Length: 297
Image (cartoon, rainbow, N blue to C red; front, top):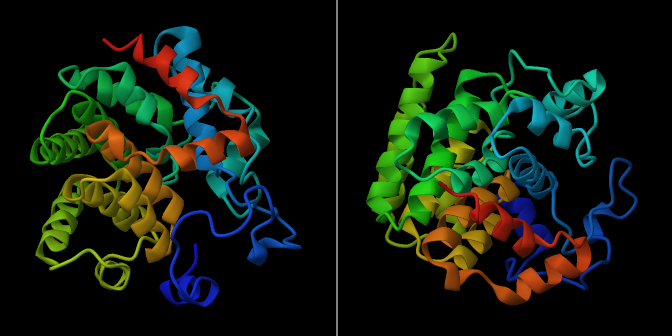
């Protein structure tokens, strides 16, 4: 959640990977009252993505009850400052359905739904995205963001072209807002298209220019930017670095763009980074992914 200027303050040469000794506390978080994040530690984005994956693997479907059950085991970012998560954990009810919250906290965790369903099963992708969202995010735009992300990941796995991935994401967002409307007029698909077009006009994707064009600080910029990067770039590694250097909600942008690009260009996933992540977090992500991939239909 750093500004672009703060990114440069803490990292004058830019972020080039893990800046420091993996496992040590990130310098700016030393003594932080909420949490001392460590270098190489995954955020709540990964924790809750794994929760959705485990729910699907256990129940062989996508249900908000099973997702809620697994999400109650998550501990990161559970504090009053993140209302959607705080309210869910305070209720401690896996059957709970949120009636509000339009943040991007649903979109960051729905990649497993896109792995579970192939891209031609659009109705199930949309319903699955909503089921994976509503424990914490019941707002129309939050669900549309999740639907767009789910569809994009699924299409990328099915070897769709970047243009096709974008079109599927736009369609999923528009259809989601039609099925589950909110008080505001549908706008998410148009935001995705606009950001993609604006990124395409830049002569090069540099952090300063992208930050000025679309700084990721709310759902209508975070997820469209992630989908834009995921359909303009050709490297998961480079998209993750770009997201980190832009600032804002960088882990959300990186997780969504990285999921799409990792599916399209798997050789661009940085193996050394993954080794660090497993050493620090012990997620066993490959085993989880393999179990989930076997259920794809």
